[in-house]
Every structure is written in structure tokens, then in C-alpha cells.
Image 1 (cartoon, one colour):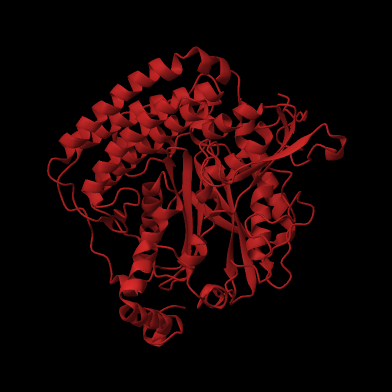
Image 2: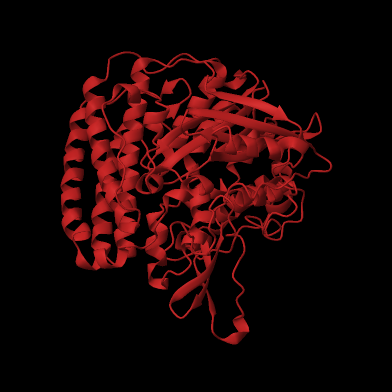
Length: 390
Length: 182
């Protein structure tokens, strides 16, 4: 498989070698897309060199959202880190909450109650639906179908209503904490969730008609932004991006956490690895998550939702290092935590799925793409800048 | 309780590239999960962690390399995975670890015009830096109607409020509030 840059072996890439572009020749133009631009996910900037309509080179600039979370956490006690972690990623805060809690629990050897595991899985699946629905809306918006974007945002809001009822917060829920979850489900939560799931499924029917059966969308996304199977390991591609490219990795299946080993589901893989295929797979993932939520609500046992922790102000975690991972809506997300036995974490490293997708992979894929498709391609990778900078 | 499928090994810096390459080519650890760094300032070393994953056997291995903190330099592994150069660029900026030969490693990634010590090092004091750089300072000028009307209609009350704010910004009573920080 030959990459766009003409190199034959993806294991020994030459992608870092930028094409020599003479701007003085007036053949090329350098333009910036971002940091504030409707076609860029979050705040990041693309320094594009274009020849006519086609992109010949791209440099990704991040740093507009750096808040230094990893450094801040080194100065805080474990329990004080808990309200910070959800702010690392706006569309998927729950995965950060879960991974931080899971890493601390694993280092300290804390076992959480059975019901807390089910509630955590329920929250994560609802978060996946919210994130993927918003992503699908963004994808449609990038190709000019803003109406679908509005539909999707409205349906995400229905999910945020559920989260508000559950945790008191819409975006940053601060619900999953070390030792379990903050409190039990509210009365009637299952019925309200079922009503929202029906709305989401109805939305997916509409999206099928307006987005996936749309001749313009098919023409524009067909063959755009292809990820080859050979690129998966060299670039560290995960999640839906990898599952469309022939990969079968899904953390929920490969490293079952919480209650995923007791749920009935198959890893969904895509048949085509372009922008269209990735969107289609995400639609299927949303429907699968709806099914998983129903299974969780049906099988959830009764019982306590929190285990007793040591005094949070004097909670010391034994020295050691660990890495925990979960399948977020965009792929494998992981937390590396190193403890030195004190009340403060020595180091927490957040491994977000966007890190290599948005930097190394995107710079390679963008070459040869028309300017009009840059936004659509970027959205199809589901990049999230706050997670790159942490 | 600790994960049974995750282990950490420490290798000397001079053999690290060899070890990682062997793991990738013969050990089945083809997926690079992440590269991180732990600052062990008490021992005067940086611990670089290369976390690799075997997607077939579902195993993780962390290859740890200890390098001297004062002369922080490590052999580049950008030829092994395409994503490595991004990690190395970040490590150089945040920890001051150099990776000679890594493409674009000297370009700033997040911090532009940074002239202090690399911020992720343990001896970089965030609080001290923030106080020195951002606090105390004058508030921004505002044209908020609420503030303007308060100034016009109740100048005495507004003056008292301003005085309390200035007092707080000058650090009065800070010792009680900030003793837990740091």
C-alpha cells in the first residue's frame, strides 16, 4: 500500500518530511483554518498550504485550550482531582471520571459494589450516545446540512436532561467517583431513559433518509479520507476509525471492564473506510449503545452504590504505576497513574484517542484533499483538542 | 487487584531502542499506547514510560527508561511509529527532554514564547508562577450596565466594594486561605 507521500512501508514512515513549497513562486498560498472556525472541532488551527483548491501540506497547531490538568492534579489530593478530570474532554466527560476512579481504585485495591458497576456502565453508554450523536450532527454540518446538526443537538439535549436529573449537572457530571457513584438512580429514571432512546432511534431513521441516502453527501464523501488497514498500528489508530479500516479492536470486548462481559453485543466493524463509512458505523454504534442501555437497565441488581473510602483528606494510595483503559465514543481512552505512596498523585497521564488522530494521522490524510472537504475530514476523525493538550 | 496483564520492566537508556524494537517486531507488541514521563526529582532521574500493547494476546507492557535529569537526552524512536514524534515533541517542551534527530522536535507545540523552566518538571511551581504572572492585577475595564449604574447611583457603596476587592487582591488574609496549597 502506497501512502500519499509515496512511501511504501508504513512502518518506516517519511511523513515528517514536508514537501518543499516555494511560496514566492505564487503557485501556492498559505491559509489558516482556525483557531476559531466553524469547520474545526474545538479550538485548534490548521496551517494549510494550498495549490489551487488542493491542500499540499498541513501543520496542526494546538495549545489554544491548554489548562494544564495533569500538572494541576500533581498538586491536589486524589479526591480534589476528581472534579477536575471531567473537564478534560467536553463531549465525553464521563469516561475521564470513570478512568480516574478506576485507576485510583486499582492502585489502592478498592472493590466497588455490584450495582455501582452497572450504573457506571449505564452512564458511559449514555455518554457514548450523546457524544456520537453530536459528532454525527457535526459531520452533517460540515457538509452543509446544518438542519441535521440541529436535530442531533436537540437529541443530545434530551440525554443531557437525563444527566441533569441523575447528577445535577448537564455537561460535567462529576457523578462517577472513586468508590462507586455519587448516589443511586432517581425514581422513574429507567422509563425516562427508554423514552429518550426511542427518540434517538427515530432520529437515526430520519438521519438515514436525509444524510445517508443523500446523493450530494454520497458523492462528496465517497472515497474521501480513506484510512488504510496498514496504518492502524503505525499511527496508533483506535476506535471507530480503526474498526472501519478493518480493525476489530474494541476495549469493551478485548479487555472487558465493569459489566461488559455480561452484556450481549458484538464488535461492529465497518465495510468501508472513508468519511461515509465512518459516519455509518457511528450511526450503528449509537443504535448498539441504545440496546446496551436497555440490557443494563433490565439486568441491574439492587444494592449499595458506594463503598466506604478512607478519609479523603488523608487518603494515601500505595506506591505503584498502572494503566487503565475504556472504549470511549472515539476510541481507546486511557489513564496512566503513578503513585509514590503519598496523598498526592505523582503523575497522571491522559491518553486520549485524539492525540495521534488529530496530529500525525490528520497531517498525512489531508494532503491532496480539497479545501472544501477539510472540515468534513476533520470531523470524521472525531478529534477533540482539549484532550490533546490536557 | 492490580492488573495481571500489565507489567513494567526497566531497561538501561542505551538499550531502550533495541528493546522497544524487539518488542514491536518479535514480541507482538505492535501498538504503541503512549509515551509518558514521571519526574523522580528525589533520585535525580526522569522515568520515561513506553507503554506497548499486544492486540492479539491482549497484553500490555511498560518499558521504563531512567535518564539523567540534569542531562536529559534520549534516543529518538520516531522511526518506529509515526505517532512517536508528536509525543517526543511534547516531552521536550513539557519536561525539557531532548530527542536529537526527531523531526520537528524543536518546534513549540503548546507553549509559545515560554522562557521559564519546562512546566511539567516537579520543581516548576505553578502557584508561584501564576501569582508572579497573573495576580494581583487590575481588573479589566468594563462597560457592564449593572456596574456603571451602580457607580453612578450608589458611588459610596461601589467605592466600598472596590476597596474590599483591592484589599483581597493585595493578599490580605491570604495566609489562612492558601496554607494547603503546595
